[in-house]
Length: 84
Image (tube, rainbow, N blue to C red):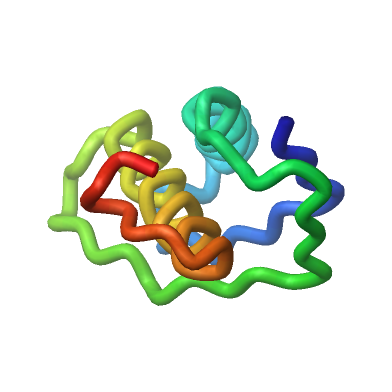
């Protein structure tokens, strides 16, 4: 199970009114991400997610979740392209 105590997002003005939804959708997307048993990560920073203006908030959430999952997989020593 993945537990996130705090999620800090920096969003362009276009998405700020939807920040609470984006954060919830990121959490939903990450709910199915497999993590190593007993693994702990005090802090995880992901590179900026690039999106074209007008991209839907749900899509942005998926991109953020994918970036987080990639970082987690890298920390766990797994190849994210290999599926675990």
